[in-house]
Image (cartoon, rainbow, N blue to C red):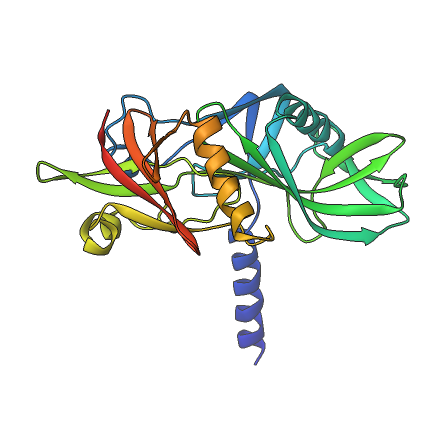
Length: 283
């Protein structure tokens, strides 16, 4: 029995070591992009990406495997919050913020870290007696969408952007994809979508499945749902129209919107319960 207990204890200690968090230090910037195996199937000379620039060092979790996603961990919360506040200021006219949860709060925790990584917790009092779990959707200059998941509260007039009590701050660059075929060759092209529009084909899928499964290819037309939180069909359609006409320089061609993104032509068809994106060819 003693031998069994010792063996169990050894396994527990060993396994706990496997899950120990380690960090990557980024000096001044970090870049989110797509996996190489996807980039190799794309027709672009330069794959769109996003580089978050900031002052000093910011740490992310080394165990994250997807290059279009990162988790902030091991940072001085005050420093990271200041850098994120700069991001919000830069995109103040190009960000949609969704409140996931709002709760009454008399105090909120935020951590300071010294150079050795030692944590000193501080307690701040929210000005409005509340804290918010939010998701920010940033519209990037290259047509891509970036999200940030975080906890926010306001103390002494300052917005603090910090980790949620159940999870760390995460940042995601979205790559909505479409499989096309020209002259017998399959390729993957990028789509640009309005904020908060859900899509199914992206780098979370295995590249081998996307390239082999005919369901992703024929026809080169994808069906997408309207935003659920808009009240009427007219509003839902107008949200899509405004994006492709005003932000993608689209134009009406009969009853469809035609637009070009990254040298690829698409059309948008607005139906009653959903809209479709159709590949039209290279520009």
